[in-house]
Image (cartoon, one colour):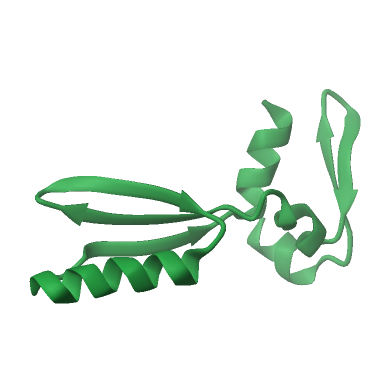
Length: 90
């Protein structure tokens, strides 16, 4: 999928032998624009979904700095073509 995202101009996603979506990698990835932010707090994983990752990260880091804490395991995850494929073929 990474090669397709990097090299392809247009992609088609098939389900049961039928095309369910066609577009450029950017078009297929656009979707709902949700970004997932993950971190650990007090040993438990926190997962947030947002369309405003910069604002949410700013708030999270400001709060952590005010408490004198680190955001352990902080990760920002955007959808991949594999995610889109799995959503459309399930």
